[in-house]
Image (tube, rainbow, N blue to C red):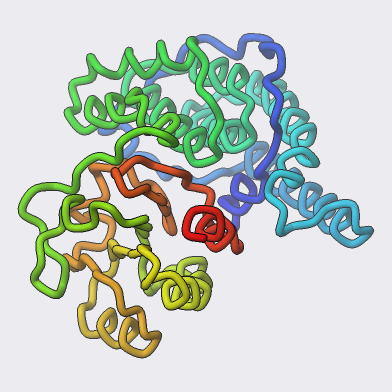
Length: 328
């Protein structure tokens, strides 16, 4: 079953739309209740997700085929697919009114929260979250906030109110995540000081991992892993740019999310990634990543000589263009 492909296929919408009609009365499912459920889409929910997934895929392929959509241009993808996402959400609202099982309503709502937040449809997402209270409400708020940040969608005052609500959660991890998402740095890091690396960390060459070490240099902080295909795709260009600008005041520090040190060392050596690296072998439990709210990789920050963020938009050749301007 490939239901997850449905929500990840939509990377859509730039404009916030009017509030959709209210959904149903509030539901509540605890973590304990969820453990007793087989949370798989079935019946009308399964049929809906399969149908919408199929039709969306066909529309995307048609646009790519006739040249009206460039899949490599994320901005164009967002503009082209925004209306599709809104239509799916509207149809999901009508379906939800007929679903009696709380577990199936939860599946549908979680899928729509992910879809809506990846599509920039903030008011619609807020309306979906209003269906729920308790643990599931908190999970939906966090899921939506992560997606909005990933897609660089500015959060509204209404959504900030939901995040502030989480600061009273009984779960300390939820409280921490909400506080991080309300932090102005993570909203718009450009021009702001990059937070210091956690104390006591060292790169694999035994030197301290701190900003003072790189003061005066243009620094790329690269959160990555050898198992991540998009990260691997960036390695060749990074090596080329590093060799071109390393003697002009440019440095890279890699923060690895790998688990196996031998595989990591072999990859770094083979690809001649001759810059400092941090490795702790803890995968997504990496001890540096949480300081910066890393939810996906690759994530890159380009810093100036004073440690302020220049930009995070650095893939697809944009890093070299930035360095051409800075290190002439």
